Image (tube, rainbow, N blue to C red):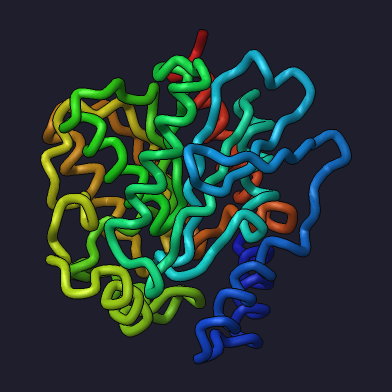
Length: 295
């Protein structure tokens, strides 16, 4: 596909580099998505999801569909309901699903395992409200993708029912930062660099083992997990986190589909109103959720 639309996004990001101050960084991430707005048929409802601030998004006809439980990106230190609301709503439209997005606690104020505890609370909230596990698509972008995998692993170990599928967008699965694409794609990815990831990992881990399976699922035994869709851009420094994850999952007999989208940068779904392949990849994710979480 032509790269012109994503190149415009790349140029815009390069013109507004990441600030040093944490509060300013958080505001920048929120601004990436908050300016797009929502279509008029989308309703948003704040909810307390087992003690975790969250919100439902719905479109007409989605009440009888599956539920997407969404964990936002932001390297465990930024991102919010506002930053990803438009993307979550569009994913729900494509899947014919209600979506529940969680505002899990962030580092450095709340290092690991706070985010995982909140994500597990959100999943249990869905079960307690009567949603069948097979009708839940557990999903996340970037750090949220790694967190979604950690949730699934925790559920498996606790003997709790697993979701119907996993949808992982640009997942960060290796906080030990061993992927070759951290170097080979450094000049192509305007959002994520090795130095920045090392800073984020230090804030989230707070001394924990970077290869621990609940912070770096690349090193986990993935046997028994539900079918997963992994979507990643070819221009991402985190490309190898997805490619290697697909190999680990496949070797563990997990049904896995890996989509590598040419020219796409990290978290390109955020820019779907302006990027054709953002729309196409969300449509692909919607078809996957519909198929795996069918009633």
